[in-house]
Amino acid sequence: MASSLRLGAGVVASPTRPTVLLQQPSDPLPMSEDVPGDRSAQGASFSEEAVPHMDAVYRFALRLSASRDEAEDLVQDTYLRAFRA
Image (cartoon, rainbow, N blue to C red):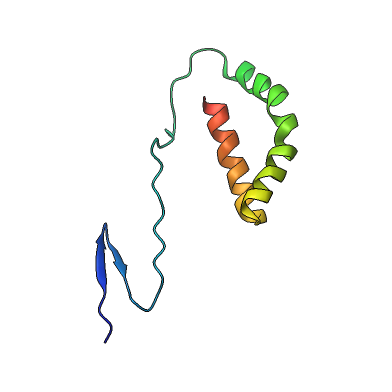
């Protein structure tokens, strides 16, 4: 029987299986926040300024990750953070 190592937070490492630890975000995104001003105007401004660059951001993310799924996730996270900023 192989022994296992408890890493904390319910994570158990096994000597026969590699352990992947995911880094927690240092600043979690709030689910909702009060933003002063007109949200529709903010959305329109974001669409005009950021959306035209989405293909270039995706190509860059695809080069970084070499995975379409990961690149899509990176672009989604990037644009969500940019929109909330």
